[in-house]
Amino acid sequence: MKQSLYILRLLLIILFSITLFDKILDIGEFKHQLFLSPLIPENYINIISIFIILIEAITLFFLVTNKLDNLGFLLSSFLLSLFGFYLYFLVAYFSFTKPCGCGFILSFLNYNQHILLNFLLALLSGIAYYLSQNGKQKNVLA
Image 1 (cartoon, one colour):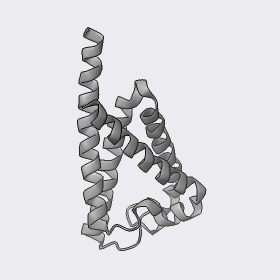
Image 2 (image 1 turned 90 degrees about the horizontal axis):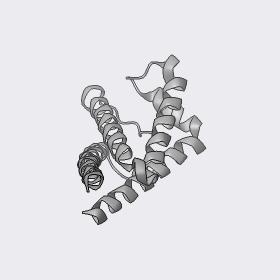
Image 3 (image 1 turned 45 degrees about the vertical axis):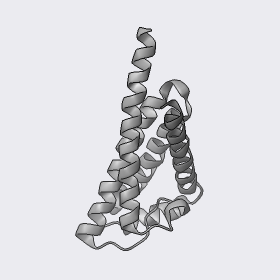
């Protein structure tokens, strides 16, 4: 079980690192992708882009910090679910076909695959959070 948590944690670290740094290195393109979204008001793009980058950076920090990895699992589960629902609403209600701002790592996926991957990783992150919480509670009691 520990090895499975480690592998998932490593996968999430890689995923969040690549998407975060892609957003930071090409902030203009990231903001442009947000601008294309019918769900985001134009005057909030700067604030939302900074908020997304900050929350992804915090999630990544938690994931790489051994004592805070359970919070990283919790935040990643929340973010991946949120982004999954965001993509779902774009596709289902707006027939959105523009690329997302997730970075080149996911650019080879179509929207249905992207949504499925987000929810699968969110579910695995939630399970990892639960397992890491139980493991840490048992260590405290031992």
